[in-house]
Length: 440
Image (tube, rainbow, N blue to C red):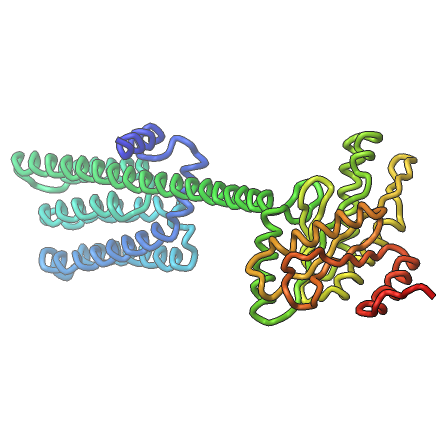
């Protein structure tokens, strides 16, 4: 049914000449057929030239070498030479094969020369009839002329043949009637053949154009689908507000880093980052300012982090960072740079200067851990310990004994907020393991 529908649409676009009703489409078709028509035209011209020279042998047997034979040979050589010259011209310039003037001039010369043989050789009626049938079929099948010109050329050939037979050839009435029927049948068959070939060629051309258009639409649809899939993948991986990895994507990447760290024996640390007093910012200044604060914190964190570090939005005002090849000391230094990058420059929006600070909890993923959950819980406890102790600080949580998993005793908190905090924590660290001082 689909093929019949396509054929019906194509046939509606063709006229009685088996040409497209749209002149632009017909011109496009003829341009695409130019090389084929040029090749076909050259073959037709060489066939006509060879036919005219071949029939000269029959002229010699019928007329013998006298003035009539000389005139016949001159006429046949003229037609053959004209066909050969046009064939070479078409070989040099293929566009001549679709020019009306040169094609019809050669056709007119060929038909006129053929009709002159009736006068010069009136006794070769059967030879003339064979020549007329041959030239008629060549005009229909091989000369790439448009259908009206083909009909006009064959009409001139048939009418001239009838007149020449009546004037110069002595034929019985039965043979003359047979000749007329033969020429009528040849013309009808040629017309139907040319019409059918033209329709088939244009149907194939229209189907080819439709296929190309369909392929272009498919290419556009595939490109749009690929773009849509890429956008969906981006939306599935990236937080739309801050532009960092979302929670799911972060844990996919962090798990890959954990496996690599476990395989290579390299450290991996996790940081939990929380914006201080974020709920108060939202309640006092609105969610738009809160969104700007989230975006600014994410952008400043990305500017400080290393290329190998992974940052993602954990939820709400919390961010989570994975630091490959970073032990607790390196992780604390990176976290301090993050904290200073956030707090040294307040959020300035329409004259509103809003100070921002963050609290960071750090833990290291132990080699014996098979996932990120335990380390994430330690970092989360360190974060909440930092918020309970005043916010705007970095807190590192580690097991009591380095490299040994935490087994249940309360962890030791190392707050890092100001120089005074660091100075206070240092003597306490130095005195670890000494007995508590007694009264003096």
